[in-house]
Every structure is written in C-alpha cells, then in structure tokens.
Figure 1 (tube, protein in one colour):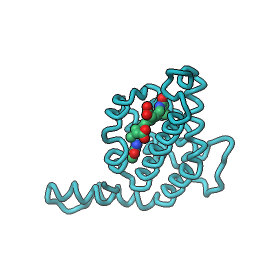
Figure 2 (figure 1 turned 90 degrees about the vertical axis):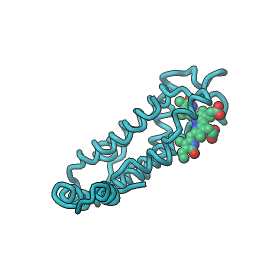
Figure 3 (figure 1 turned 135 degrees about the vertical axis):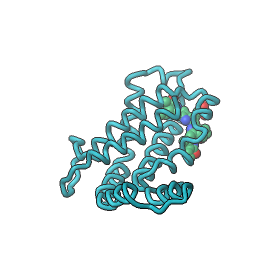
Figure 4 (figure 1 turned 135 degrees about the horizontal axis):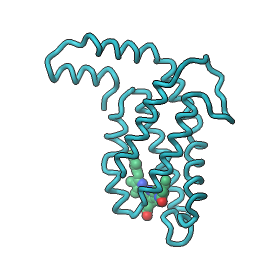
Length: 177
Ligand SMILES: CCC1=C(C)/C(=C/C2=NC(=C\c3[nH]c(/C=C4\NC(=O)[C@H](C)[C@H]4CC)c(C)c3CCC(=O)O)/C(CCC(=O)O)=C2C)NC1=O
C-alpha cells in the first residue's frame, strides 16, 4: 500500500535516483492542497450512507427485476450485501483520496472482486451503474455543488481533486468490467 510520498520513494529507489524536479513539484502540490483533500474525503465519508443508498435505489428504479424473485438483489440478505458492497467501495475510495494513491483500493478492495462477482452471479453491469451514480454524487460533494447539501467551507478550486476522485471510480469500473 502506497501514498503519494511512498510511491515517489519506491519509484525513485528502483532506479537508484534522488527525488527531485517534477517529483518534488508534484509532492509540493500534494501538500499545498492537503486541507482540500481532507475536506473532500470528509464530505464523501459524512454523506456515505446517502450516496450508497441513492445509488442502490437508483439501479432498482431503473431495473425493478433486480428485487423481484430470481433477481440478484431479491431477499433482504442480498440487498444488505449490495448496500454493504457500495459502502465498502466508497470507503476504500476515501482512503485512496487521503493517500493520493489508488493502491489501497486496488490491493484491499478490488483484487479478486470481479472473480467473486462472477462466481456469485452478481451482475457487474448493475454494479457498474451503481458505481457510476456514486461517482456523480461524490464528484458533486468534492466540488461542493451538491444542490441539497452545501458544505460550509472556504471556497476554492477543487477541480483537480474532483478529477482524481472520478479516476478512482473509473478504476473500480475498469476492474469489474
Ligand atoms: C474488503 C473488500 C470486500 C469486498 C469488495 C467484498 C465484496 C463481496 N460481495 C459479496 C456478495 C454480494 N454482493 C452483492 C452486490 C450486488 N448485487 C447486485 O445485484 C447489485 C448490482 C450489487 C450491489 C450494488 C450481492 C447481492 C452479494 C451476495 C450474493 C450472494 O450471496 O448470492 C461477497 C461474497 C460474500 C458475501 O456475501 O459477503 C463479497 C466478498 N467483500 C469484501 O470484504
């Protein structure tokens, strides 16, 4: 598991180089945007139950067969597993946001997930749609444009962070499709 700093160290070490130049500039930027990063992770985390339940109810609205007999979230047990999976994915994304690196998400959450879903018959297209809805919500929270839930925060440009967060959701989508 890497963060922005340990990733630079590991990369430099494999080629026996000191860290400097553009690597240091990138770390400087990571530090200078640190408070925004903390706010972004906090906004996602403090709205996580809303983000997850909205995504899962969204896929059910779009495809009511999911919760009917024979559907992949028919029975409370499966609905609970589905909501829990949404929560797990979002939680690992907040860890990646804090670390500024996707390795925690890849290693601890996504590794083997596609195979698990295939074995259990969990439809990855529907998971992907839920992840896409969570992505839209999380990006809105990072940009503080969620219409019903504005955060009181010093205004600043978080578009780079929003792009980074969107990228973590894309990592999830790619790993299960
Ligand atoms: C640490 C990281 C971690 C992950 C990522 C994880 C995922 C995970 N999701 C599972 C099941 C599941 N996941 C879902 C999810 C869904 N079904 C749908 O149709 C929807 C599209 C979707 C919700 C968006 C369901 C319904 C099951 C239960 C499947 C079954 O038992 O038949 C299982 C099988 C074991 C279990 O039921 O708990 C695992 C391991 N567990 C972990 O520990």
